[in-house]
Image 1: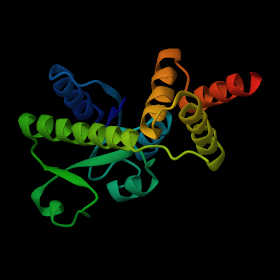
Image 2: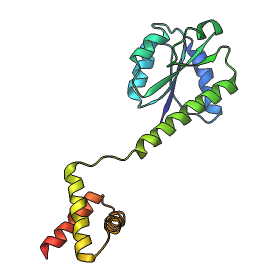
Image 3: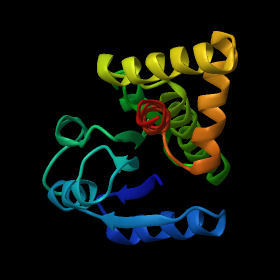
Image 4: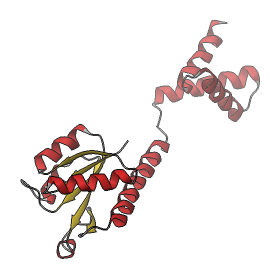
Amino acid sequence: MDSIVIALPKIEDAKKLRSVLERHGFSVAAVSCSGSGVLSHLSELGSGVLICGRRLSDMGYLEIKECMPAGFEMLLLASQGILCQVPDSVLCVEMPVKASDLINTVHMMLTQRERRRRKQKKKTKSRSWKDQNYISNAKLVLMQRNHLSEEDAYRYIQKCSMDSGTNMVETAQMILMLFFEE
C-alpha cells in the first residue's frame, strides 16, 4: 500500500495538513520539517506520495527529488511564481492550498499509482525454456493418450493447476511423472 509523507518547513503546518488529509480518509505515515528526516522516512516506506514544500530547513525540493526512492512521487506545494520553474516530473498545487484541490490531487496520484501497479501485475510473466518445455510435453502426453486437442490439453493442465493450488509447471511435472510411472 502506498504511503503519504508530508514535509513542510514548519512542523505545525505539516501536522495541520495531515489532519486535513486524515479527515478525508487518507492515512499519513509521517511528517517532517527537514530533508534528511523525510528521506529517512521514505527509505523505510515502500512507495507513495511525498507532499513537500519548496524549501525545507536543510534542502530544497529538487535535492529531495534526486535522493527520493524510486517508488515515491512528489507533490509540491508552492506559490504561483515558483510553479513555472518546476520540472514536469513534479506535480504541483498552488499555495495557498485549497483543501479540495489537495484532496483531489492526492486521490488522483494514489489512484494512478494503483492502476500502474495493477497493470504491471497483469503483464504475464514469461516462463523459462525449461518450464515451457514441461508444459508442452504434458500437453503432448494428454493429446496422445486422451485424444485431446492442444487447446483442451492446455485447459486441462490449467484447471488441474487451479484445483490443486499449484502452478502450471508443477502440474505439468505431475502429469509427466504419472505418465512415465506406468
